[in-house]
Image (tube, rainbow, N blue to C red; front, side, top):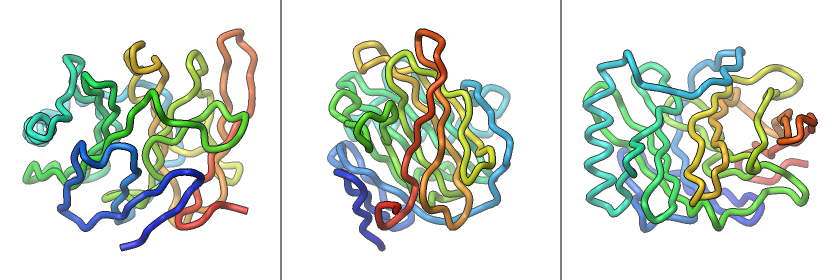
Length: 220
């Protein structure tokens, strides 16, 4: 177990098989285990279409979230990433929370769930257009970070130490929950420092931004 202080937020590393439900909103929770990260970026909405073996896990996750008071809205779950037997999801609740969960595909076991209030989160760095929702954490399958871009801004590339990182646009939030785009980024093992993010603003201008991804302490 490790406690991580990062900016103004705290993240908890949970024991495997523990589940933190809506009572944990406003915190960042991560779990551990690693696998190789693909180098190619993937700037497209994630979908579980064509992956029928995910259905049992998705049903278990929706049921558990509903029982905890964090039920998905009618838009349902968005698949953030699947690596081997592990899958990660993002969804919204009717109360304006954004939730993130990881589970095992085989056995349909939900490992953990965490939520944040999308309207009350703040950027990590002054002047940044990026807001970390979950992570950085080791995850059950790979290190990761989940962040939102400023309303109207679109991610064009994500790099770690000048190399392209795997990233995906998972979901555009409901306008009542700020309407921002939420992204999942797979981080390399032993990550520290920052990821560099290139954004396209609503006026078409391209700007550079970055997010800290050092676990356990703020990057220098």
